[in-house]
Image 1 (tube, rainbow, N blue to C red):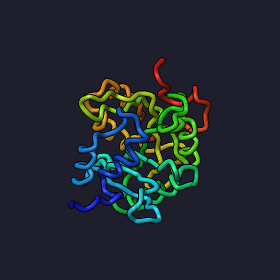
Image 2: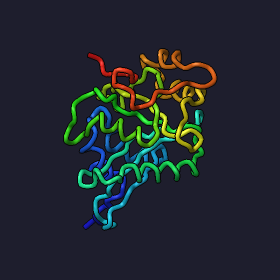
Image 3: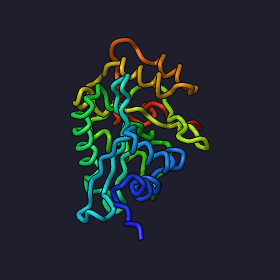
Image 4: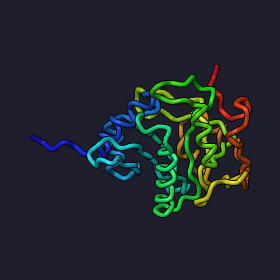
Length: 226
């Protein structure tokens, strides 16, 4: 009999924490996810449960873009049983501190749904509550057009996403951030995407003013298309 896989291995993480909580267009295919973790493209931070063989409480997944020195947080997922206890914020802060030391990114970015993207969903969460969560952590939105590129051949580009800044040089961002790492990141990340040109054109030289996430929803960037 083959041994039971650890609940903390990438395949188990994908099945237990990611697949139940993300729509298919926002989710890497399982085999691609496992391969990307194995080759170092994706980095995992797992918040363990008390039982080392039990389902983990939370996971943070990120990728580091060397040319721009930008760390993109791809996923933050908390098990349904552990939600509401501050575990998501603890996991994210612990992961970012670890990766700041490991990679020394200039910026840490994340994709966050616009609060009007959809109604609260039992499995996929509440976009408005998620925006409030990132606001409490000090994140701010970049005023640039953005969409998540397709993650697999059968997937669609995901609109209604804001690109937010979590850290600049290891600290919560002020009112503005350096535009150059954002420009380098978007030139690569949105290569071939229809929004690439508009995203790059929206960035000034020098530093880019950001938007606080507690603005009214109609003043936040990238609302979903009608």
